[in-house]
Length: 354
Image 1 (cartoon, rainbow, N blue to C red):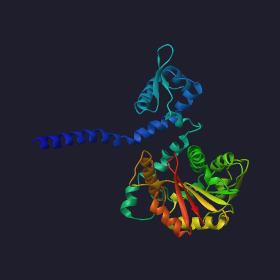
Image 2: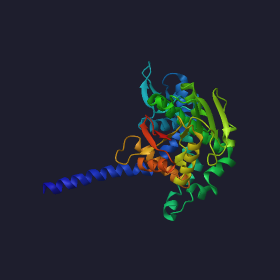
Image 3: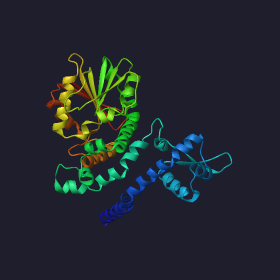
Image 4: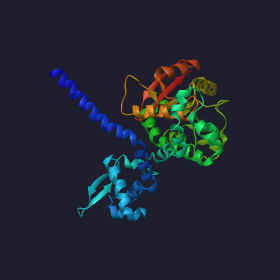
């Protein structure tokens, strides 16, 4: 009888948790939409510029919007811990920044606003809405191609505005991940004289690395239409080309968030081209990508697995990989040894040696 009662209580607890959780998934898109609204309104920017917490009246005046809907937006965001409430010297409730809300400041040091705007854009969401078709059809055609009539790379080349958003998103991620690399494993760059960033976008990543390690000569390598919009940085040369054909010569090649866009055959080709490009005496390839550890899930595992779903939606064969899958690629590309180092980011740093 007692055992039956315990089972009943457990089922009741599981049902109560399920009842709360299902609403989270039903309104998951609402959460994304409200955060997107906060970025578009510039709520975090306004509080940051003000230099101290703001009352509803102050914030609505700064944003030139009506107080009533803004109050409801802020109530939602505070409930999720994105902003917090503090009292000012007059005892009035104010909206204050948190570590999370500062990541929504458009040009903040740790801003992820551009990355958020990319992933909440209608173009990206249209692909995710077709994810089940990809699974059921068991085809290599990506949901992105089904939604937009061409693959992501052709679309980017023909649509400069979306290409700019992608580059800004990658740059915002770089501003978070690169400091984690610099502080977490600086030894990776010791002994190198030159570094080619393969698929380096607008050059933000390489600029940060050259600033941290000024002995490096940097080559930012990407498609011609991408590097044509890159900013000029001291110590960085921009080179246009195709990584599937060749890679500029350097002591080491650096690839961040590149290989997860492609299937195994394409990755092996890219890695072989990198292998040809690096110097024989101290050459190596530095890969900054997520590594799925199925037996050891942590707080960032949700992000890694969500990225894998994004790859399924937006690319023909891209994916996030396990340690064994990375090992397979590196050995097939001809590397003799490798190391994997964890950093304080979604990505890990993989060094592949000749």
